[in-house]
Image (cartoon, rainbow, N blue to C red; front, side):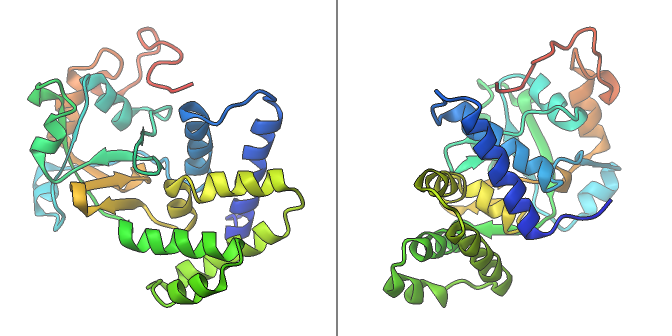
Length: 257
């Protein structure tokens, strides 16, 4: 199967968002709508592969920081680890992604004080921090609005030349849009939703150092020990042994529709 070019990904994503908007005339951009946009892009970027399960000794030997993710129900972890139809995550920092931290106490806040609901894992992928992503977002926004002074001021701050090239591709795509409605949609999906831009730029995660949070966009870059995988799935009603039980799993369970 032919791999999509960056331009093809941008075009397919924009056309999907536009079609969804047009087919729902009374569509109000909200939490659910943004989530649908994001999940489509995750699949388009092939960032939906299963986490890697490895032997415990191999996991401990990895030169990566241990991360912790807390949830109110351990079933949510089992879904993340075992199901092709998983919850992609969504939160306050610019849209989609799976929130985790190297601070176990931070993760505990999401468990209703149940330490069993903390998942321990590692991550190996390409990360963009909030400062660099902010420069990229500003460069894109100022460029499409034609604010030249700000463009020149920000241009030199983008550390990755590949990021700059891809942003220029987005700028060119924006310029060929014919209507104000299309341009407004473009700004919504690429400037207001940080995770979408990070995915298009080829990043697997976004790092917010202020709150010690890593937002993972690419599930396939997560790594978990075999014992932790077995601990979680053994407590699950839907994923015993990591296998989906379609008799117990509701059709829309864990999905945000």
